[in-house]
Length: 250
Image (cartoon, rainbow, N blue to C red):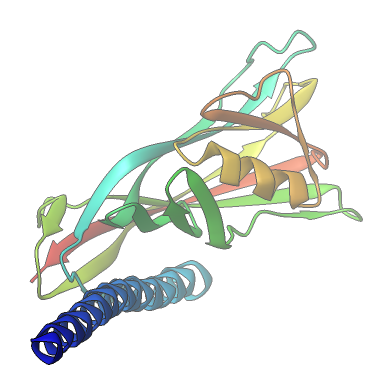
């Protein structure tokens, strides 16, 4: 009788151990599979970033990038507004300003969002956003000039603004126009020229502007989803807005 009880206990112990290992192993395997899916999407956004940079640099009229959805959602959402403004000594806007409303290209799966926003590739995990690549704001200390290029992605009427599920989707990007604006405006002598960014990713934009030579964060104007930076080299400030119509195609 004792042999039978012992056999039953050993059998139960072995079965429980196998079940525990199997459950833990399957959970780990699923976590790894999900991580690989997100990494694949991130690599696809690396390609998208390169394609849109080619549009900036070489004037290519259009580019296309393929991405596998793997259960996530691809959308044009979470608008970022970038304004280059002239202000007087009291901080009041004077003259004209340049405003670009950007529909960020985003892929969301669970707590992770990967996207492209006004020239920056980013990744958001939970509440934290980091730029994987940065815009090309540039200033020259010798010429006292600054160039602010903005890629204004916007929803094309040729396709949906969001798509989800599985399978492969093509992100088609086509240039819709290029606009230039120069500051200071003729006949004006502004106290300062500033960049104002309103975005769900304001913290990442703040970090970028704080680390970029030629820009100084204005702490009095920066809070929440708004970051404001003064352009240090402002004898000539050129804003170049490239409008890119984005559509999703299966």
